Length: 118
Image 1 (cartoon, helix red, strand yellow):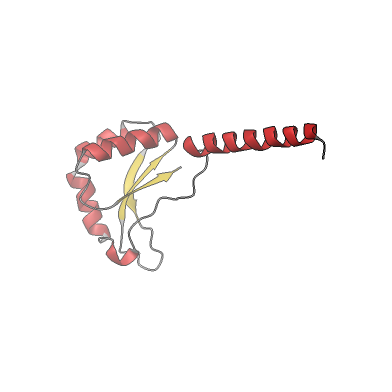
Image 2 (image 1 turned 30 degrees about the vertical axis):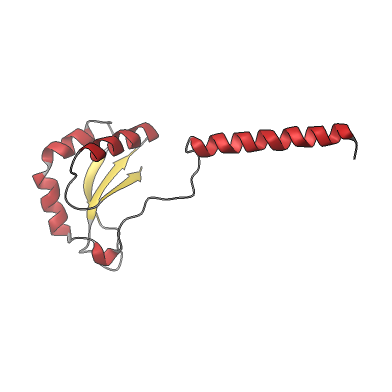
């Protein structure tokens, strides 16, 4: 192989590594997905309803972050629809970050919160 071809291949591989690293750092793709506790550890739907009702101020603060943000009871367990969590649906990465920041500064709802991109 000619030295020129080796240089071209080296440059292309280097650029691919740089672009891949930037993509990973900026969250363009990630290997981890959001998860929630196992279904047998989730509270009942009625307890989640009570948590949302007793934390109206937090619910309003979360919703005020963006126009399409919703806070509702989520039922992620198809085999046990009586188990639930607070499901916050958002539209953008910026909204997601703002919701995370808000929840990290507050005590939360007292039940698991699951963030879902619309």
